[in-house]
Length: 249
Image (cartoon, rainbow, N blue to C red; front, side):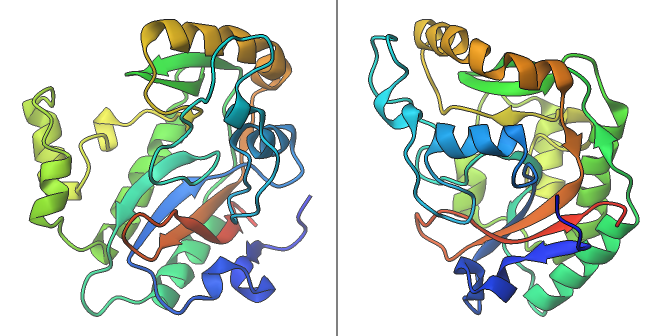
C-alpha cells in the first residue's frame, strides 16, 4: 500500500521526466501490488511505466490454440479505465498547472468501490465492467470532464476524422464536438479494457480462458482509489504514467 498522498514518477526519474508531452489523459490504474495490477503486468507484458515483463498475452493462452492477442494496438498504455480521453493542452496551459489541479481534485473525491466485476464485450473488445451500475463511477468521470475540459485544446480536423464513425448517434456527435469524445457524460460507462478488436469466436475463447484467472478478482471487485495522469510525446508513442494521485488522501 502507498502511504503517501500521491506517487509521482517524475520524482523517480521514469519516462515522465521528459519536459513536454503532446497529449495527456486521466485514467484509473490499479494500485501497484494489488491482484488486478499483478494481473495487468502479466497480461499486457508491460507495466504502465513501460517496464517490459513476460506476458502470456503475447504468446496466447496455454492450450487456447490461437496466437497473439491484440491488447492495445498502436497506443499501448497497459491496464486502465479511461476517465478523460487523451487531449492536447490549450495554448497557455502547462503540465505543472494540470498536475496541481489533478492533485487538488483527487484529494477532494472519495474512493469508489466497483462491486463485483464481469467480463463483458464492448464492441469487438473484451473489458471488465461492474455487474451492477455504479453511479459514483460515472459521476467521477463526469466530474473529471468538467474539471479539466478547460485544459484541453479543440480537436484537430484529423482527430475529428478519426472519430468520424457513421454509427455515432446525434447526441454522441454533439458530445464529440463539445468535449472531444463521443462517450462522455451520459454516454460514459466505466470499463477496464483487456483486448483490442477481436472477432466474435476469438472473443469467446479469450473470455473462457481468462475467467478462471480473473474470477476471484471479479468476485471481490476493486477500489478506484486514485487518478493517474498519462502523457505521450506524439506520433505512435505509447502513453506513459506521469503520476498516480490518491483519492481522498
